[in-house]
Amino acid sequence: MPGTLDSREADLETLWDAGATGLEERAGLVRAYFSERADLPLDGEWAEEPEQDWQEQFKRDLKPVPAGRFTIVAPWQTAEVAAGSTPLVIEVGMAFGTGHHATTRMAVEALSELDMSAVGPVVEGRRLARVLDVGTGSGVLALAASMLGAGLAVGVDIDPITIPAAFENARMNGFTDSGTGVVTNPETGGKLLFAEGTIDDALLSEIGATAYDVVVANLYAELHDVLVGQYRDVITDGGHVVLTGILTDRLPIVLAALEREGFSDARVRESGEWALVTARAS
Image (cartoon, rainbow, N blue to C red; front, side):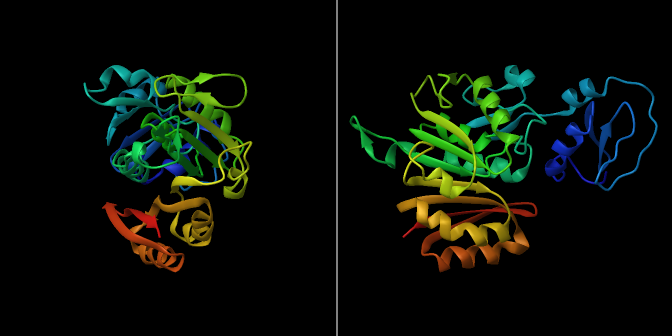
């Protein structure tokens, strides 16, 4: 298929689910290897290749991704994380959000710049930030928020397939499971929860909190436009939104929506054709 692993990240799950044994990026193409042809709803051409261990080749080609205070890695790459950086382990192919796409990387960088100890309600003498990750996918952004010190991180997604994958990623990062559907960061004591559903569902006390200090969402511009009113409904005054998945030529849609709903101090960062916007709830 034409493209790169970054630009085709949204298609990787489709390829793995269809039985791909490995992926490779080479000469402007993403090559997916199968033992036999599959019916795929993707643009691409089939070609016969000599027998090789394509999964092992894919592992060799995949590189760690530095992102803020973290290095995002697959489980077999933890030894490659440089001293001073925290490994954020994400299983490739389990759900959208492996960290190799610019939007995921920028979101982790933006979260890394927030001081989680400076937002949220005071509980037992310290502030506990509450973070909502909308469209959590692999759970990478909720995981990053929790590892950055959030007292509660909640990831919601309408795709039920993502939830077991997100919990598995949490376990690979050392979170402990009490069997209650909530996992705990053993270093900070912060709680982490993934649930199938929407922003409204995240308001339910049995799922998360009645309000959030940070809302992060890696979606797309038109969906942000639809949801930004709901972001404002659940975020505390002065709270932070971190929105990405935005093509640069769609930025005006998101900026106008944030202004419409009373957000201020909008700031933009770009990486290639992709953009991220941060803003504060007024």
